[in-house]
Image: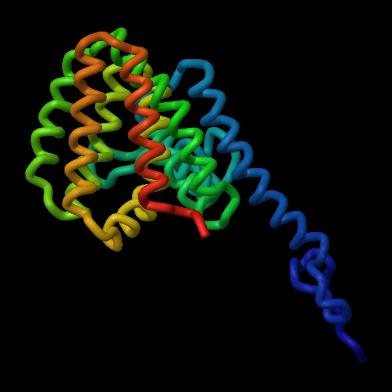
Length: 258
C-alpha cells in the first residue's frame, strides 16, 4: 500500500518534488518577518525616535514585540549594517546602534558596479569632476578651519610619501578634507564614496606608471594650487584647478581605456 505524507507536514511532494503549501507558507513567513523588522526600524528612524547613536532594543525583545522570529530581526539588522545605517558590537553596553556611515555603503556599491561594468571609470570621473568642482568652490566660500588645517598637514606628508600606496591614501584624505571644508556633508560623503570606488584602479595604474616620481611631484603641486585657491577664497580658481587636476590624472593613468 502506497503511503502518503500529510499535506501539512512541510515535506516536498514525493511525486513532484515541489514544496508543499506548508513549506511555502513557512518561507513566506520568514520573508514577511524580515520585512516587518526592516519596516519597523525604518519607521523608528524616520519618525525621529531613533537617532544617530541610539541603541536598539535587544534582538529577542524586538522580535517578541514585533511578533517575528529572532532570525528575521537579525537578518534585518545585518542588511542595515551593510547599508551603513546600523553597527553592532559585543560586550556589555554595546549591542546594536544607529550609526550612519553612508559613504561606506555608497563606496561599496560603486566599487561593485565598477567591477561589474555597470558604471565605467569614465562615468565616475565625470561625476567626480562635477562633484569636486562644486565641493572645492564651496570650500573657498566657507573655509571651515579644521578641515583646511587637516588638508595642509596631509599635503606636508605627501611631500615625503614616495611610494604609491602611502601616497594614494594621503591623496584620498586630502580630497576628502577639501570637500569637508565646504561644510556640506552630502558632498563629502559622495566624495569619499567615489574615492573608495576608484582607489584600487588608480593605485594599480600608479604602480605601473613610468615616471612615478615626476608624476607624484606634479600631483603635489596640483594640490598646493587647489588648497591655495580655497584659502584665498577664490571659488572660481578652486573649481578650475580641481577639474584640471582630475582630468589630467585620468588622461595620464589611462584607466578604463583601450
